[in-house]
Length: 452
Image (cartoon, rainbow, N blue to C red; front, side, top):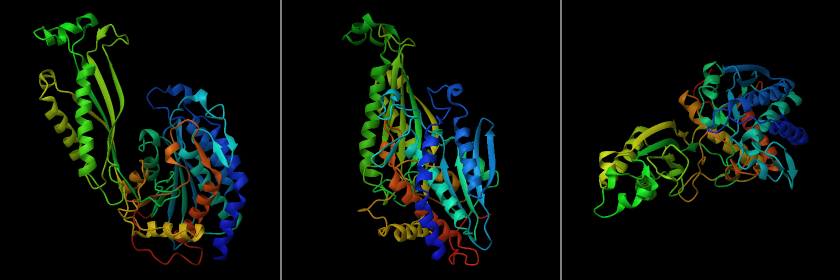
């Protein structure tokens, strides 16, 4: 306990260094270069630059550093603190890429990349999602080094690229397949639901769907001919925007049914949704003088962890096509479904030793009890994370970290600095408890998987 307490106290003492490091990281524009609307040439190299800054800090924390780069312009950083032997190994994971800034000219701090301290918060793009978490990981390693505490098991820090666009094949999965495996992984994404620093071992599956609806273009003055009783109708033109609305309405109806039919004991009622987040329609020219002949609707679909992704896709297609049979045009010209990406769910049992180690660490550091999930207290990570891809590689995972998902991807994103330091202390305690100390490895080993 003396070594553990010294490490936790040292994490607290590193607060000013941690804030300075976070400011340095936020100043770097590390927008993911493959996000639609982003010019790769404008942002490429930002992810690598963040990891170059972290590499210097990792080395100062006594970590052996490695680069993994499926794309040479986008490099992942791995830091390894070798274990003394006999203990379990652990990965801490964070991603360095961010989404593109929303309303970059309207930020409280003047710019998304101008970190500013206000009322115990640091404002700036990526502060919550998730450069603050990357700083917390560094603080764990630095505190272990400063206090001369050697773990029995190996500790790895994975600082990865490409998470925002599900490019795990370039990021987390590439790192694991390069040989950097462990018995378990903690992904340090912000876990703010139902309260800050929630131990979150479950996440929903996510489908990204594009639906393309075809119409028939004509001069806008011909609208009356397309809708007038007894008129030529579809022979003249078909408004793809309006046909797209029929598709939209059908999936809104299905979404309401999901509120009653799709559930999971660790999710709030109504969590599983079919969200239309992009709707665009025109005739190939962005001008309203045409009846539009194409509509595109893009959805983010959250489905229960226990359901198969292909079954969910079939259910949605069948429902839409059934509705379309009631429309003369759509019955003959059904919409086209483009299933773009599937982010698999994550589900590590609450009873798993990794989860319970983190629960115990949180309780001992914060003094607050962690209730088991129940319908009255649903516990889940309300977004997607690279924990899914560790699990796909046979490495049990849980999500836990500082920040608030409600302000991620938003203007004036920020992180509570007290929460960042507290998260780092809990992560340090969990690493010690999971990996064990030199000469005193952790006692329980059942349930671990994906070992070296």
